[in-house]
Image (cartoon, rainbow, N blue to C red):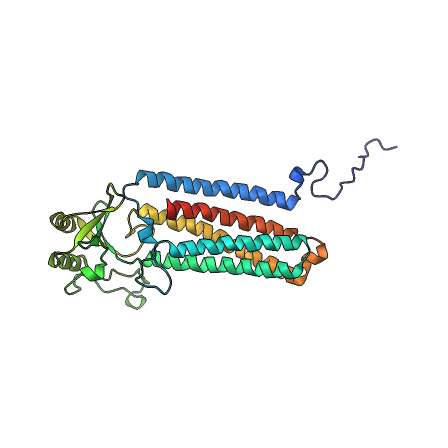
Length: 328
């Protein structure tokens, strides 16, 4: 008799290989929970860094209602946070349709799973398109500003405290600004980013000629509003501190305020957007498997439930991103 033989346990070939099933969850669902936990820690680190940076520059941080006040097809209409709220509603509603898809899977109802997954994919796609539109507006800017030697920005306002765009300030001929370089004008130098539409001299000339204009600094006053300087101080700031024009926002300059705001905005919302895009791709793959009857043959729609966990996590993270960037 062979004394080295191993006794059969009845679990040979199974993923857990014996023992108790943790939390009564399948191997795939538990691994999804592990991934969600690790990803949650990553987002927590990013948002904590944002919070510390905002606290450090709290007196100069951009006002969200002024930055995110656009709405599609309503150019010039001040609609602070309306579009962001709509984006958030669409994403949260897609979580509802995802829950309905998972519930339909539990009842082995292929028709309803197909319907609700299609609605979830549609919601995710609309959110991604909305985020791309928001990025476009943020990058292109609206009013423009003047950069100072210390890296601060000077915005323009009228006597009523309303923002004034660079195009409404500038006057005179556009001189002192070289021509835009293109690929046809150089062998090694291919192209460059767009040059400012106006020169600093045009801004200074227009500002000096219009007595109603004032300089609006980044610093917040006791009412939480941007500080507006008197006429004499405004002229001094513009003439002695201004060094260039800023239009829009990128990773190094930001017409809305502290450059760090733009850095965090692009990085954190972009990272979340990548998660949404990945989720939409996975949902599409699972959706086609549902159409092919793959899970009907398996006798279980657990794969729909697993991708649902990921989708709910992405939606939950957006609630925190929305709160940090748009509400606080």
